[in-house]
Image 1: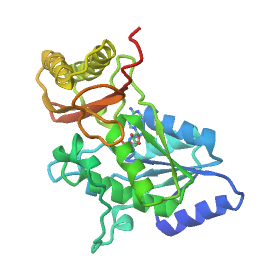
Image 2: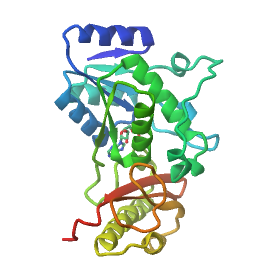
Image 3: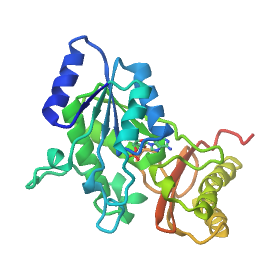
Length: 286
Ligand code: AMP
């Protein structure tokens, strides 16, 4: 496994791999790697002969009062996990390599970023789409792998790739969960034991929503109210949002008739957790 820290040697390493005409797969991450990241690597390796992982805690996608400084970092452990998972190249750029001090260009995806996490985290998606565009231009992969856990991010990146004609296949991968349903997240490490127990209410609320919708509930407000009750009953939490939206446009649904994305963001203590489920009402509850 090779590691690079600058753009030029990353391009050279990928170009060398391309000479053997192998498909290049790319998994962008912010590090603190866990089993969900490795599931993306596995998906990439199953389809591509050469797999690149980037590890970059991108300052521009964190708000001024968010956890950029506190975000977990463990490069040595990350590299060991990548090596074990069969990654070919890890790109670990320092911030100065990615952003010139006078950088003046931002990639903005409109509309899809106006809902759910968008209003709660001003500038977040611009930070994501700008860094992902830059990473795509550096690595130039054939396909890139993103988790459904960040469903809005995945939809925004799909739209960006379509709108900008980027020649990259975006592959969405299923959310990886703990046995009790909590979606894996680098931020889970910061949960106190009581918060960790409380955090299971997110997935329980999403499962209850799925059951309601598949049981014939068409009103998203009723679904959201019941979810809110379930989360509030689990302990003190601040619900940033509960949304029932169109899975592609991320726009709120007024009457549930087809597939919807049910998504939420909840603060437990200082930790902000997000999760979602895709629900097809035509699939019956078992
Ligand atoms: P992050 O390092 O948190 O920026 O995540 C890097 C990639 O891993 C993104 O595409 C995330 O959607 C994905 N990811 C993070 N957690 C999960 C999860 N529990 N299940 C599936 N994908 C995930």
